[in-house]
Image (cartoon, rainbow, N blue to C red; front, side, top):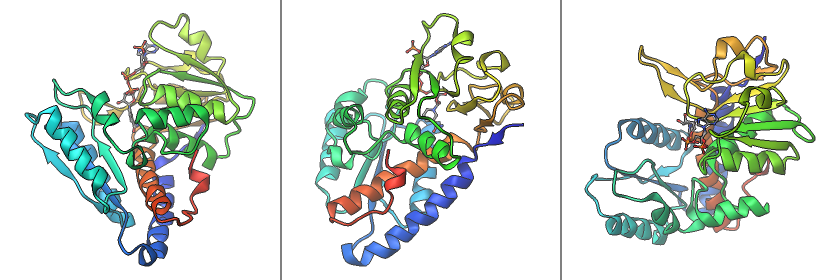
Length: 293
Ligand code: NDP
């Protein structure tokens, strides 16, 4: 039976460290770290995600400066809000909650963000920094996966990793991070042929296809580590991932559950990015180097 890569537990441990960092440095800085979560429109899932992020900020002592703009807001107005947050000295991190309402394009708005305040690591400059191995805020979901693998002591150097999905949000940065950790990485996507055979070569299989329960026992080599990034609401209630957990768990060496695997780690890495930015702006050591990939 596989070891469970428990993201909820690890997120709790990291939050304790983050709260200690805030406590130890706040007097020197003179203010708490600030994260501005910018939500536009009323996507219901986003409402839950934003509330979770704000609660997590509260637990570690990050000041949450949310803005919720109506769905009718123009791109120019959203941009003006981002520019105001860029200039606000109390804001260390900005997050533009996606998806945006129809008619608003994410790319130019992400580009309007100060790259040093880009808490989600999605600014073009920060994706370029990841590609080049330069420091900068990293995309939260793949960074959370790396923290989970590291915490479990999963060896990556020289091992074969397969990432299913090539989105800018998850698949691509995930592949770059695994490669930076010296894994030999293959990226699969919707046009990949014989996905089963490819996945069965993986020592570490990360699935971010956004297809409920598409990966089963036939895709998994016995003893592989399986990370399920997918999150889906089941029609009968509850959540499931991209992996058929009950089929894969008996085969795998380790596996992330859904919920309670990658999801909580994504939120935690957002807090990490915000704290690192706060410390950098004030020339303080953040003491979180093991979490910065
Ligand atoms: P996208 O829809 O942007 O990307 C999905 C990727 O999977 C695409 O590259 C697509 O290929 C590929 N894909 C789709 N179907 C198949 C298939 N049958 N075989 C192989 N590859 C396939 O999704 P995201 O990357 O944004 O998210 C992926 C999942 O992760 C979603 O379920 C999302 O909800 C979840 N998620 C979870 C987070 C968390 O915190 N746990 C955070 C972010 C996302 P192609 O490029 O060819 O279209």
